[in-house]
Length: 403
Image (cartoon, rainbow, N blue to C red; front, side, top):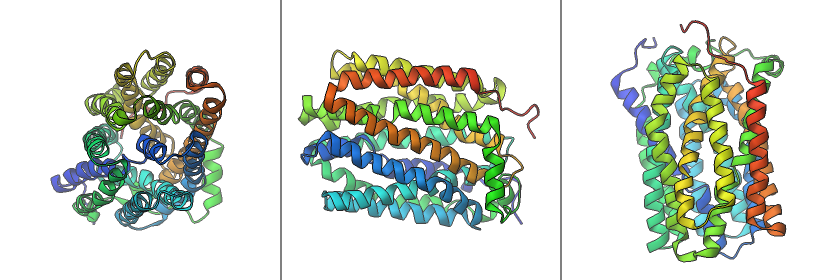
């Protein structure tokens, strides 16, 4: 029998799981660009590795969501994925050669295909639809705190020890992540809610897929997310490479600062976004997130010095708070009573993967031929199109009555 009200232990366990999960994911971003640049990798090769991870994410998101819909224990799926992240970090740290980095990127991207829907499913299964907005805001806040504090620690490791130490630290952080997950009581996770309203999804996978792919609001949201990531995914890794070339000794510290600043903003504003999404609706906050991305991309193109870049990153916090809360919240709205909540998350993740794969390759190509400033301006043009697209095509999805 599933408890109707989750215990304090489970809720706190979910807080710390989202916090610790951010810890083990932090290194797989801008720190990879810094690390591989110090290992004498070209920007084209770094962009290729990042694109490989994005392509794996693109291919794996739908199966990952379907797996979470199919398993009887979302916690087990999350635990297996966390272990894969730890293994990928060790491979990257110990063998920074192309075959090993390739396999590490594939393993990490595959694990994320399961982790993202799993944590949203656990959250929805614990608290239900009426409280999911605030719960997602709380998740995003703890995740951001974890990212900020871990980025500071990893920046210190990269500066005082070596960039390689960042990934060894990541592997060690798997242990507290699994301990936090174990504190979430499986008996309190409502399987019906976790799957989007049905106790078990229909075995007809194709029917569920067709139902989502013929929903115009769902398709508009998927397109908006693809465009957002096209403009966003390459931005900080590209700036990380610029920082490394300008000031190799301080690159890890500056990158850590660029991660910490937006995460502090996210930690502060995400609960507010969760509350306002229930009162104002989803659409105004979604537009705000896209507008902040556009402004940030223009400012990156004309940043006068590296320290100004850190300040600009506050805008990334606004976008991250809005999208971090709204993506699973809007998906919950659109997939309600379908039994395919996690499959729907996987489809949105596929759209995100398309955008991210295009972004890193696109930015790397332009940077190698025309310079980083031109690449930032090109990303700004994509961000402008994305803002217009979401304004014109994305309707409000908040139910008239929350149940």
